[in-house]
Image 1 (spheres, one colour):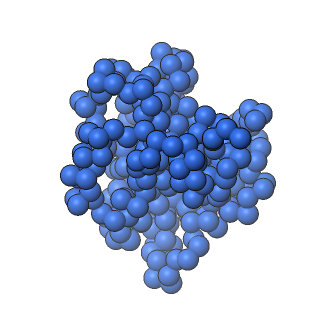
Image 2: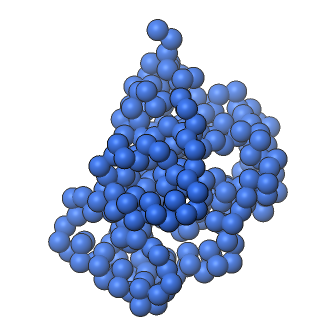
Length: 263
């Protein structure tokens, strides 16, 4: 597949409204009248208190969903994210800033897209080794922002009537050993849900071992159903099963070749 050439900053500004409308069209689907009213109220709150913000309607939906449609809690989450962005400036992190992690290809933002235009990330567990918390934190921010850019910069956007701004993650655990474990960073990374609310469409965990299966069984009762539904642990290591499972959200011609059975 050809690599997508990213638009210039000027072109992004010109295309932003076009893409934003498609994202909003997707996120507003199947909302109730009450939910639509909450989206408008949330948008008004943001405009009143952050007049320079360019947040779109689809973002309002994501914040509200992340807080079970509680307007006060959703706006508090938005405020928290704005404070975080002002401090960390994730959009200004460059490839050079995370060069060592980026060239390792332990995480890649693919050119492929999901059924509704979602960006696709692949995490290669065997290529990750324990690292400083601040370095990993910066790298993950860079990856998240890169995934957002894929949606805005893709030449494929015209084929979608509506675009889902969320991300699909493929966690490839093949060849993972104990040396790849990085438990110390698990808690800090869990906070990213506050900074990128409802950013995850689905995560496919491939090649899980018995320890991961047991660990997930233990924590599953403490997770809400909405979160559990986004996690697909493909226990069968057969490529046919993996490929078929991922076709729920990814067209077969967009699934990385390494997960498609020969023939």
